[in-house]
Length: 385
Image (tube, rainbow, N blue to C red; front, side, top):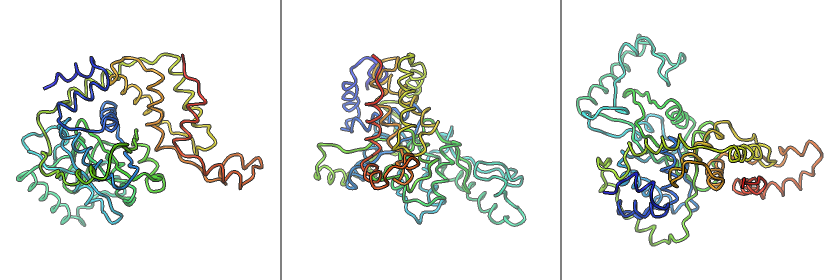
């Protein structure tokens, strides 16, 4: 067993990754692992896109293997469809656990007194209060289901959930997920659940425009993004990955290479990262240039700016430093804003108010992509010396 935090703080960055690979006996993608680890340190959630749909199964298994073999997480995966209901989504999201373990994230039945009072649970506001006189059968059914769950087995939210094709899900499923990410709680007919610590949701999507299918507020709760496009991955390795069954892997390992305590220590190190006035001005200038860029519709949200700084601090302890550098700011810019930038149509570009030619604008706007916008901003803003 590796001395975990000493490995993370005393070795060169790539050597740290190789040491973790050797300990896990698993050749994971380093960029994907760094995104997952940085998300856990910053207590954020992530989007992973793939350049080819053939990679979806491969990347899903790699993320789940990182969660189970390195962090010892309880894991689950969900494939969303337009017909999926919120009940089906919740049922696939919850995982079984030993009721003797208890703790955060474990199952708790809804108390009957709360049902009678129409308690203000996150998903039950004043519009959806329970009328016992009309819903007696539903209440008894929910409570009996909860009691049977306690007698047989408990269920809880996983530490890592990989959600595929979230952009194909309906509005109700997306609203349910947004409520979980926002409140860190889940209330269903089966009981009341609290998200465990740590808790990470990874949305796995094909490399296409995700803004048309996802709620803007839900998209903004995914703090970082990563495009998986390995240069040395051939068709043979993809087929080999499909032949590996996740059934042979335990849902949770008690002995993890990096434990929740290690992640909490890294989070504390990230919170203590210092940002000099020059680097902070550099961060501010990047945000301002993104908001004012002619190819960015609606600017960038305040939440994105907060996540931007959090990611910068999360990357510092991974590189063995306690201060932010311009190079880490550049990395965080690409990871934070690539999935958040919305490119306006040509007729909505601001220069149309001053007589710009619509055809010329249409041709110009068609050449912009979120990645190009970010690189244009980074080229425009001088880095501190």
